[in-house]
Image (tube, rainbow, N blue to C red; front, side, top):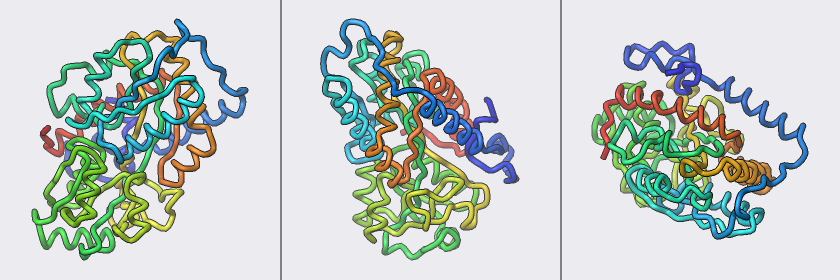
Length: 352
């Protein structure tokens, strides 16, 4: 495992659990440097031109698979991209939600689809974690052509208004007084929403009860109804409810405050030094998709992420658009799989 790409804990954090010492280096500077390089390339080059793809591609509507229920972060991102791609590619891009198994159902459908560019998949953390949680009918690297890393986002700790804690320190103190009695919701076992909460428990020595759902939207619905007490929800999914007072925001999970919500403190500055978790999202296609089609999709996705309306919408919701080359995204996924395997083993997480 390449420790230089580990993004969990700050280098100054001393980890007492020997299984977790591997997460001692952050890559905030590395990710920032990558974004600077990408941004410089955008500014230095003329607008991207559509690559010449074989057979007049696309020749029919493009199926965009999403592994979670409608309304969650992956679904919102996919629909924003689909709208832009439909405008520029001359064919409709249709989002299809296939929820379940921490995205494995949708991912298998994508792996088995014809490699002609008319089926693409929105990847999330589950693409890197599922191999450590369940037996898969596909290979998460060999069976895919990776197109672009699309975005990174922080999670936001939110609690139901009836739940007493108002800060991270109060949350820790209350949890220690009520061990094993507090339920927290997630968008599924092995998702970043789940792993954010598991890491928090490991670092603070507390214990909650995990209630997994088939996506961020159903988890949020139950949270709003008071069926669960807290959630490490995606910013894009939960921030509007926090601003409306339907949920109480406690802290963001990244190393720095969110540009879109600078009034919300980080977990690290609120009592858990070194805590740092971010989510990621990307787009892939079935393996053996022609390189010219991958290049065309990459150029269109990068162009969509540069569009002011989509970019501003994502940033205002705490999501950072990225855009990368196919090679960069492939290397990124290859590194994520062994890294998350270490986390899952250390936290003793089992697949559903």
